[in-house]
Image (cartoon, rainbow, N blue to C red; front, top):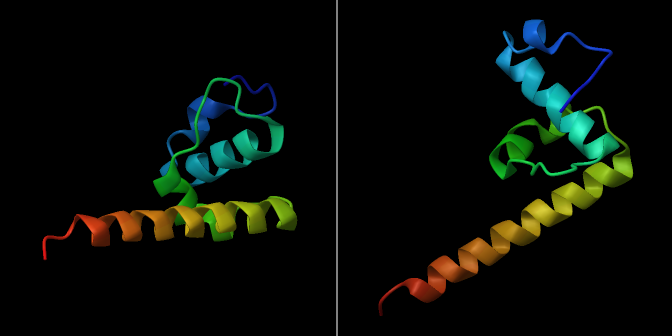
Length: 79
């Protein structure tokens, strides 16, 4: 991802701020060929400066995915 407004080489030194910045960029301006890390999104969702409706939708997807993972885990248990 190329960004002309931010010196990413300096920002990368601060892992948490860089992760938040990159997530915001991907969410607000498009993914192109990249994917959003579910773990990073879960970790930083409350700190992202994004549209409230986008936040609600992403939180919905995370909860839906969490429910699906739990149901798969339960169905894989041996009785």
